[in-house]
Image 1 (cartoon, rainbow, N blue to C red):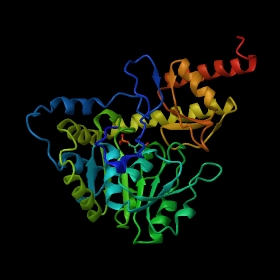
Image 2: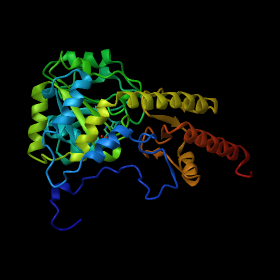
Image 3: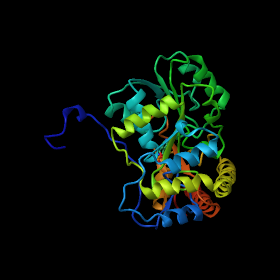
Image 4: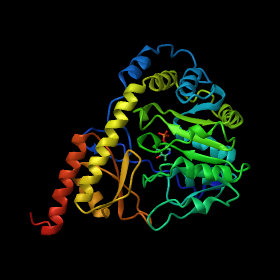
Length: 351
Ligand code: PMP
């Protein structure tokens, strides 16, 4: 830290992203990316984008209109950002003065709270690592719920979230749906009914575009206007020309999206059964990852075997690892390595 850094950041603990190795030797099952390539139609749209001399459209209107069309919303109910991380940052700036979220959830929430000076309350999960929505019912603060939650993968049905939204029309509920496309119910259909609901999604996971940095927010037009006010006070050109083209094409290529997310869900179901048959506890996942109680030595052993998983060294999830769902072949390799490791545990490593 330099001597010029504002002392208000003295205790700021920045977010630690999952490891991004520089070579392709390791099998990356650590940051919930899509294992399948970006849609060929999206790649063609990116390729066609040539006018880099010019600034991009600050309203990203091609992307906004494709998202609105996909969800049957009007364009003033949608905005986009440089990854949903940026959208969430804007939401913390706009609505985070008092904010409530689970103590085990996306690791960026506490960082945003700190950097933007929010008054945050973290609510513990239940013993079986679930979010108890009843704990949030009477909170007088903005509520932020990841659905499905990360890193557990557990989802609540739309009806349950709706009860939170309906409970107090003067309280904003933000639903982070980064993983919703892998089997959970989106709250987007509730947007017409409630003006105190903001839904945040990303193209990083189910649309195979993590490297393009595209996130989106959907909600009542007044909420979207708030987020755009923040965005235009910070970085109006937050999506590149390529990202705008990619976002529009990704929403239009529904067939590719359905195919890849279907494959990931099928692989997840297979992988969960395999891990359960090896006697591991696995939380019920509606995401493109699963949370498995393996203990941390397993995490290090898999790293030695060339497979990177994600481990959070904090209570009460210290004995769990988060495993991104890859292709069938990748998950078969992980199962093989897992069996080898289990065998070594039994034989005391003498094999
Ligand atoms: N929300 C959750 C719950 C996440 O896990 C992530 C991915 N790390 C994000 C939001 C942000 O994703 P992105 O910025 O790539 O859209």
